[in-house]
Image (cartoon, rainbow, N blue to C red):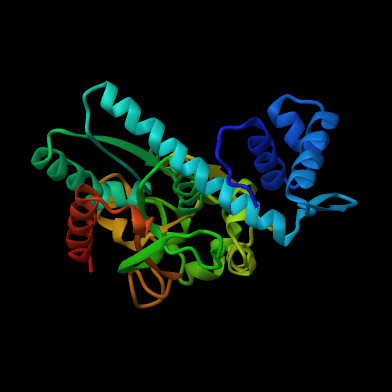
Length: 314
């Protein structure tokens, strides 16, 4: 099989677009191309490699095992190309090192903000790029080479094609948050009545990142447990906007229990769960995802600093 020497070659970009969308028509619309053009590109690649890359289905296309291999290799080459482009830009701007990291809003407020401040103070010559989002969005950025690492929940059911390492740091428990004068706070059994009120989801998962999962069962069970198909739902991509909405509407917001003190200072309180203020919510592991083989000294130092500061949250 020939090497993918030119990762920015349009044929591989077009192949990846079809692979991610599962549809030639959808990929054509996304890339502003005609369907015959994309079809011709796929046929040319299949002829070049001498293997079928897709299986045609009634509702789209699916990758064959040859297609899966090509996608994995093309994505890896694209990440290497992006890192090369970034390094060229850094050198041109007389910057020799850069950290590109991602984090969820909760971890930023709890300790990543302080980590970045401490790290940049100790390493003034290193540039820092920050991305915010939930763990699937950040995993997609990590896979594409746009970030070096991110802090987030462990992804249950993560695809085996995602060649990453995960460093667990602490356990997290989900709490339910409401405004200070919420009717549920007066209820004798608030958990039994939660489903009567709108659900507010902060930076929720979206369908566009489902390709990162081998097993979507855990995500489906989580959605079912929250009654997503049976209640009003507000999906908000900003923590700040979510707090504004929560203070004005009788919604219920699931979010990490470790944020209770942060929210309490802003008029948002934890909904009691039985005898325990924070108890018995959905639990998960929070840690750092990164490409193990890409650890330079500057990344290793940041990983160590994040781990130390995060461990203090336990």
